Length: 591
Image (cartoon, rainbow, N blue to C red):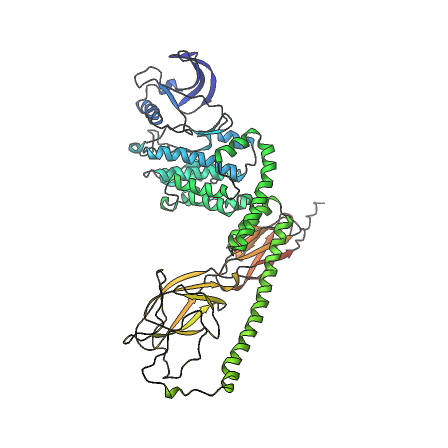
C-alpha cells in the first residue's frame, strides 16, 4: 500500500476499481481530507488509460453542481503516478444503501433520482454525457446530499464505446441499448441508465438480470423487464409510467432531457405534498426506520384525499391509482373499501335517475306532440310565405316540431371529425344563398350531452336528435355518459348542398375496475394475459368492446388450485368479485 503520493499522505484504502484505487488521504499543504484516486501501476504506461484519466479530471473540473463530485487537483499526464484528488464523500454508495435498506419509500426513490437528474442536467448542458450512471457511482454524503461520481468514460465519442480488449465501456445492467450496440450516445442514454437506478430503488430489484452479462445485454436489447408495479404495488401507476418511459428501447420514446424527467418526478412527489425533495431526503436519512413508520401514514392520507378529489372530478383512472396505492400499504383500509362500494352504489343510483328522467321526458313529449295540438287550433303550414325559412336550432332552447316539407334523402356521407377548432357563434337564421344542412346525430353510447360551438350541453334524446347547421366547421363536445366514457371535443366540417349529414361519433370507453377478494393473496390474470394484477387491488381492464364486456379472469396462488371465472364489467365502474381458492392436495409420500 502506498504511504504518500505527491503532497498527499495516504490514510487507508476506501475503494478499488478496474482502473484505479481510491484512498482516503490528507492534503499536507491545505491540511484537509481528500479522496485520492490513483491509477493502477500496470496501467501507468498505457496511453489510452492515461488519456481517459486526464479526460475525467478535465471534464469534472468544468462541472459545478452541488450533486456532482468536486475535483480539487490532478497530477497531469506527464506525472509518473497519475492521480485525481477530490472532495472526500462520507458514503455509502447507493448500491450499499439499497442492500442495507430493504424497502425504500417510492417518494424517497424519486427524491434521490431528482438529485441525480439535476446533476445530469448540469453535465448535459456542458455537452458531457456520463455513460456510466449506476448505483455504485451515486453516493450519499453527510446524511443529506446525493453526489454523482466517476465520469471516467464520459465524452468518449471517438472511441466507439470499445476498449482495445473488445470490452464494452459501461456496466451491463445499466447500459442503454444504443451504448451496447456501439451507436452514438446522448443525454437520453443517461436517462435510460437513471431509469434502471430508479427501478432498483423503487422495487428493490434490477430491471435486467441474467446468469451472465450476455443474458443481461440481450434483455436490454429486447426491452424485457418485469412490470415494476407488479413487483411493488406501492409505487403506483404514475411512478410506474415514469420508469417505463425511461426504459424505452427507442431513445425518441424516452424523456428528451433530464429536466423533463425531473419535472415528472417532482409532480409525483407533489401528490404527497412534498415541495422540497432535498429536505425530505435529509429527514429520511437521519432515521430511515422511524421515517418509514410516520411517512406511511402520510402517504395513505394523501392518496385517500387524492382519490376522493379525482373521483369527484370524474377522473376514475386517477382515483383508482390512488386507491390502489393505499391498498398496497393497507389492504383492509376501510375508507378506500367504502369508497369503492360507494362508487358502485352511485352508478346504480344514477342509472335509476336516468330511467326516471326518461319517463318524465316521454311524458313531456306526449303532452307536446299529442295532447297540446288537440287543445289548440292547428296552424296551416301551407299558408306560410315561400321565402320564410326554418331557423337554425340554437341550443339549449327547446326544439320546435319539425316543419313539413320535401322528404330528405341521405345523399351525403357521414361527417368526419377533423382537428380541434376554436368555438364560434352560429348564425340563428340562414343567409340568402347559403342553405343550412340537415344533421342527424348518432353518438355511441347515446347517454351523452352534446355542446355545439360552445353552447350549453343538451342531453341527446328524442327532443335533440336532429338539427340544421350552416355549412362549415363546427365544434362538437360530448360530455357525461354516466362516467363510462371520456369527454371528447372534435371539429366537424359540414359540407354544402342539399340532403342529410349523419354525424356518427363513438366515444372512448373508460377502463373498468376489477377488485378481486380471495381467501389468500393471489395473482389475477385477465383475458389470458392482456392485463394482470393482484387481489385486493383495483385492476384497470380496458373496455374496447363496449360499455359492457365479459372478461375471463384466472386467479392463482402457490399451494392452491387455479380458479377461472367469467365476469361482466361496465366501463368506468369498479366491480368486486369474491373468489375462494381451494388448497392443492398434498402429494402422498412414497411407501
